[in-house]
Length: 410
Image (cartoon, rainbow, N blue to C red; front, side):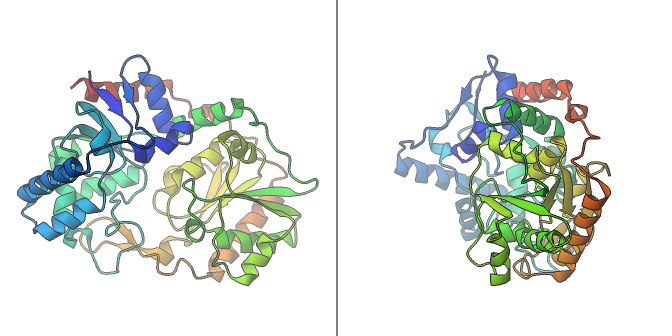
């Protein structure tokens, strides 16, 4: 049986931050060998370059696309794991670029799945279509490639887009939907058992609001995730209800002074980096999580719900898959879709343009502040109605483990 290889680009998730990977590795313990990357792997650079030339040759032969476009495509998502992974292994990747050295299972979370700098969130123009992009035939050939065995996603919306864009039955047969909630619930329970996993009480007499920036740590994502809207809405509601805001993650240097003044408030607590247990403690002690983001951040939304923390989020495509119980949260319509999303010109797909993401939108602030005030005045305490146990699905764990075992055994 082949070993399962988790590439170096996913290694940071193995500390428990990504529940799917942790659950899969737990389920496969003793049945499939798990191979991981070295921190600073040694490899032959000339052999590595030659390997990618062979990949370019194959992609050009499969598609007939011009060589310079193929080179651009391959160069955007090469993996050092291709130089260090066991040759007869199965890579668990988050990129759809195929490897010629081993087979892989592709994993993506968001509705738009094409993670290249030229074809990714926020880089589309109105009136365009992914079908017309020069990378389209290369993406199609990658997904259909013999060495890509499965395409799995937490997002039913994402899989719907993929199936509509690529009607090839070879691609469709590889797809599998994996609900996220059971994995997140398991991760929440695990984090609560770690040292420091007990709730951290808010300042006496104040209601706690939580905002988390990207797990990856980039301060630039603060704008994208709605951090500025969160601060302005917090400030407005805080004039009527005693509040404190916990921000987990970095804030960028380009915030307007009116926003920086709020960041400096004694009732804004910023934690640049938190352990899993500490982060869970804040989820377990906050009344509301604000995430008026321009994109879907399924991990943050589902973790809040599984923790009993009420969610106020934007209507980024895919959010409706998770926030579908009025006791768990509320999707604020118009925050994202009216600003950045539009129809693909030739396919049933929503594209996005983040050109306006660094502009303060007063209408968004109004909507978030109104919803936050309504929630806090209608409900005196944290959401006690939900029990995370409702998301348990032990049979799902067995089915996912079997999926990985089947690929490794092939």
